[in-house]
Image (cartoon, rainbow, N blue to C red):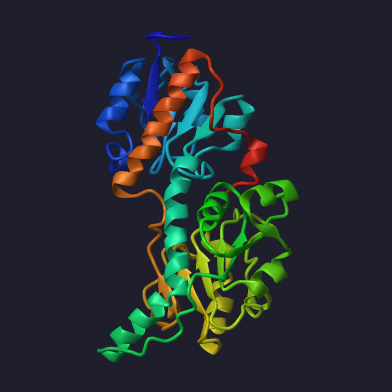
Length: 329
């Protein structure tokens, strides 16, 4: 297929992101090929002209009832990260293909993580919080430094691999736990594979990048936290459910030497007054590691490029299937 094939691309991204993700540039690129129409999964009637649907943050789940109103749908282009909240079993049952911009979103998360690793090894957040509490200067203590540090990665998916590549530029030892990663892949990334206990116990900074599912729920709890070395840092930019928050509060209360930086929590958002907001060795950020602001445009750019491949009959670069989805965040 090429040119204008006489069918439409529907978009149902939430209003908050409809222009920051699908920018004028992205919309122009799509309209150069096909018609672009808005589709509301909750209220619109049957649209038999829509063969591609662009989803994203704010999109309602694509249930069987929704798909009944899109009888010609062949492809879902998810202009965001995880498709878990949008793609249902009905999508796979009908043979609809799915592509996701998770790799574009991963860039922002990896950059955020990389920055937090450096800040943690410089003890930035603890010193800043201590200065605020003291209302003045505090001693320059607890600065581990970057050279020679050991960083532990839990998960070598899109984000974990990007973080490993960024860390490879420095004099660091990088350990990784991922039951699905092979030695050749690890060697190519410059990381050493180990079991979870070993990675936790040897890491100056432990950063989580695993998917959240039944097998990884609360994979970091009391026993695992107790393995963390003195003066180490826990980073979580993956999913809040990976960490048992009750255990984390208890642990941070008795192990003041360990610091936690949490960009995701369970639940998300934490209720006002939660202990993690008050602890001097914890920093909670409101899920900002992923693509926000001007970074959101790269998600739309990826979706538009993937659409061109589909129209031209070329292989998709970012297609996922049901089996692969089970291993992703």
